[in-house]
Image 1 (cartoon, rainbow, N blue to C red):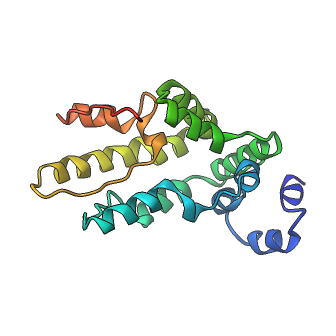
Image 2: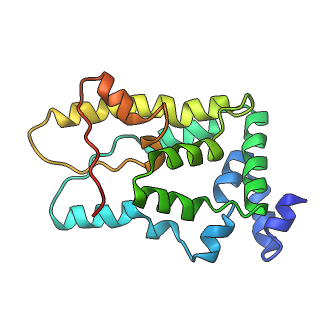
Length: 189
């Protein structure tokens, strides 16, 4: 019923999605706030930064593959995937404005607010603890090692890390510190 309501404007889209696993559906489910703001994945900050880096002939450092990202979301049990989809549907129907809140918290440099948003989007509850570990803890550990290794190279490069990886007790910045990398936040003008 919640899926039908989410796709009432385009029931054919729902029919196409029904063959997919719940984790994929939750990723493809449009966030009501994103839709109202006309946000498009192609408009993301990473696209903007990569284009700017390429104009400056700055090599882009890929910290992980798309397959690694997919494995983090797809690796859970059917129950975990169902819990993720149910959470996304509940957030959407409750008009949970994460897109705007993430942008606002980032602009303010409010890491506490970002950590709370991360907890809201990926709670460490029993039914989603494995997902949170795979999406953040495991990936952040691997990305931190890759980033540390890249920092040892003499040539410059551009690496982009999603803002949720920078917030909370499992933030990549903390992992980098344990690896001996000094991390200094830079304020937004």
